[in-house]
Length: 339
Image (cartoon, rainbow, N blue to C red):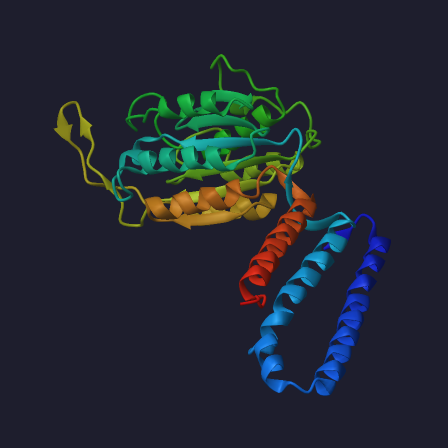
């Protein structure tokens, strides 16, 4: 804890002074009590439990000390929202996201977790959304209107995994996220975004990060996953990765009306971990809806924030008021009354 005006802590010296005065008054009362000869009357006047009469004063002194500390404008170290913070959400929508080893489906669990993530992040944070399978597409450009991102999230579909656009292009999706973070990515869906060279290699103003979720191996695309990670590293953008799914996940697709399955669709945690380590991000391996939700919530509590100081003067004032109220109530309850 730090203080804007630490010299005002000297006001706390009134506390020992008040205690010394109180002890002096009590000693004088003791001398008077010894000289008083009518012990029966004295027993009725003095409280039976002497410790009670000290409690209201102790609470009053505690409240006074809290008020003295409040004068210094105390601050605590915490994470504070940073202006111009941007996070790019990248969600795998390849055919394997239809697997139901994570309930209700992998994509359904991811969508539910991202919704709660949007509730957690600072309101001023700019959030963008990219979906990818065999290609990467911008679903929502970076914006502080998180409701628009939710709508784009709800509209995400799953490629069938066999037609045009199927597969999993992790490297291309990473390059697209870097491009979008630098605000140079097209939003009309034309062309393959990953083929475009980032316009700048310096980190954009403010905190920029990528949150990347996938459930499978790279099966398509122009860039390898670590090549995409290299672009993020060159732009000083950390990539936080989430591997979704269980090793036993399978699909039962139908091709031209015939069952083609079962097709194993295990996740690739090793590649996603390597991406996070290469870019300075965090990695999460999730095998349930609760686990992926927890990962997003942890990231939502930290992304777009930076170490800073938060003033807690109001907390000291509220605490002092509560202690003063308690002292008054106890004093009224325990104070001796005349019959």
